[in-house]
Image (cartoon, rainbow, N blue to C red; front, side, top):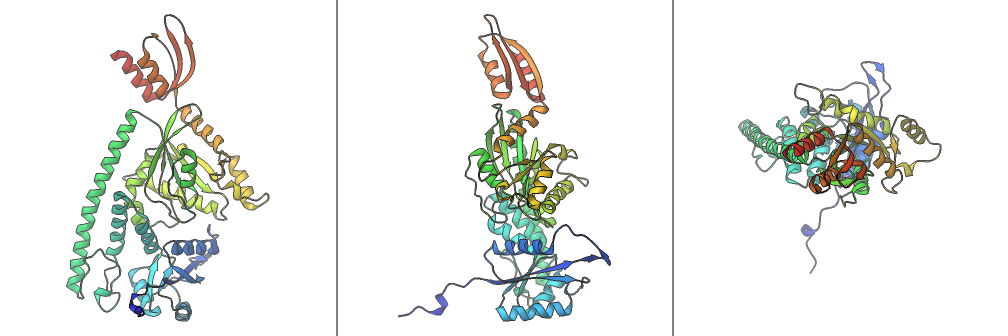
Length: 444
């Protein structure tokens, strides 16, 4: 007896990726930082990372933005022909679409349409693992979805997305959905406030030890998790894909001086990062704000490395702006730039020349995969942490083993001279640890 066709597993989702590319802004030619081909390749990578089978990808230059469909009538018709030829069921438009534009394109093309924000939200929803990550993704998704409670089709039950409460047709149901989404958003924000308080307690506990914190930031797929594993010996998930990891991870590392620091791996950045995600992931990005060193990891072998660098710095700059900044204005002074994937560079390529120029400005070239340059990176981190240290000379009784051990644990012992009556130490300490040692001495 043969199995029914109804029991067959569904096939892969057939998708197209469309990039509406603006070559002019208000009639003036602009040298855009990101080439259309590189931007399209990134969009294809994003779509493929959630299992979509990409059967068509194309750039469509925009002469002007149409309020109804974003693209021109001829372009919409051209895409419709391709969709019908390949039996496309999902079309990704790598741009920010208004609810009206999304609805009209779905009607014109007869398939589901998602924009760049929706695509990134889908990826984040699939990759979030911890309770915190799940909360942040759901909040971002609801903030995005709240603006799209319009009649996309003829019945509300055909409306995209939801968290189990979107119901039948009718204007009254739309209002109910808006209220339910609003209530859920309020609840999620309260839960994330608790996450922020918990993180604050953890930071307070670390400050009492304290160990300096080094936060990894960078464009998605720049190799942050691979570098994290190489420096710490951890087994954090690392793959050659966009947004392979979302949730922050921390491990202790020992630097050449013997100093212990905490290395924090954070979520990757991306161009045109949806504002909903910046706000939702604020609790995660606070780890960057509290860091003593911000390690900016770049994929120097990527042809668009300079534009990716600008995107990351743009997000950090935005975090320092506004009435409620989540990072201090002097964050740039704490940045150490790391040029990762040096092993992929050729001898005379444009990327190689860019890496050499960046290295002359203090950037460090490494390969997290082969280990090349990691010793130089550790030495640089050690030196940067030492720059804010103070030197203490003290004489302790030989029997005062507790305070001697404390200095070895919390500082860098530069010199030691043992005598019958005293142990004379020259120690490099952070200002906070210098104050704590003085308190210990007064208490003793």
